[in-house]
Image (tube, rainbow, N blue to C red; front, side, top):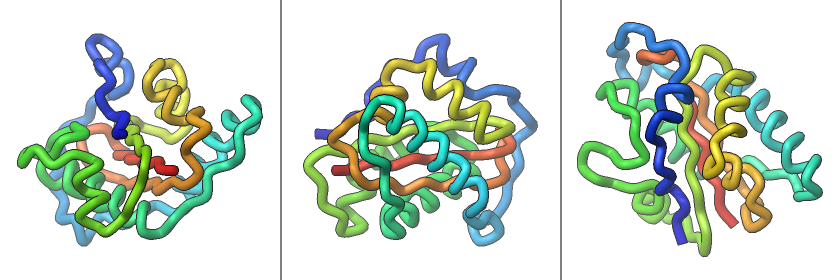
Length: 158
């Protein structure tokens, strides 16, 4: 079961934060920001700990899928769980050979990890992904670039 169909409405404008001019950068020039990834993981796991849930474990194969999606969104200037070709997060995991019973995806574009995390926690469906007891593994990609300054993709699975 995939959980990525949150209705954004006005919350999307808040989630996006400050909008900067689009920056077109080749994906090869947009590496994973490891320190920012660790910051996001620490924030997420602190929330989970407060609620009595086990911490998420970063998996490289999930991070690779998240990174590719973040880079694609920056390179092609879009912000969506679905690619322009209508490829979903579940499709991306299946194509990477990653199996799951349940999965979820959070996206954020912001000027900082802490601002993005705060906004994600204010959104009921994004908060639900962060605090879902079924999720044990995560892939977190934070990439500098694009219209928001930072593009973040968080994949969660059982």
